[in-house]
Length: 172
Image 1 (cartoon, rainbow, N blue to C red):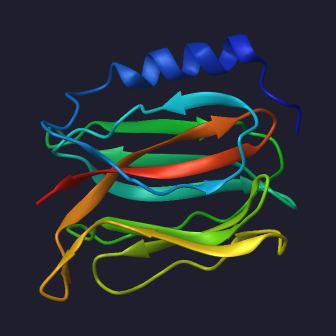
Image 2: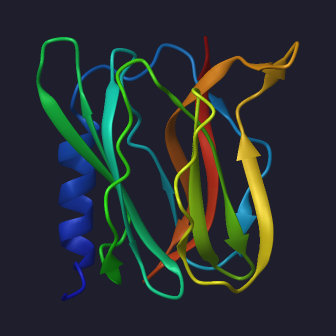
């Protein structure tokens, strides 16, 4: 698989960031996982009516990129990409309607080595990527033992791989 050029990433970002309305109020996670290398990215953010239909991961020894496919209330399908598209395309994680993405965990050091997705129904994906770095876990806030938000995007830094990641979320 050949790497995507910076120009193609910018075009992909601009095209996908104009799809639907962004969430009304977003919060940026206070913690992040990974190092300080790479260029900053933030968004695109999923709109309020987004129903995630699949999450695909590109990875090898590190996390290269995350692609989220979703459907809006008007029935249209959209896709947003975070990071690059290098590495191997892993099998897609799918979720049922009404199930929200509430957190990520994995392993990271100077780069994000691996990622796992956590959902509001208590399920989680397999771990995608390598086994370097230390464990991390980034979740939406909890209140009275219940998660009270859902992830609408990511921010962080990337070069050829995702160097750093944090969550962007809304509170339900």
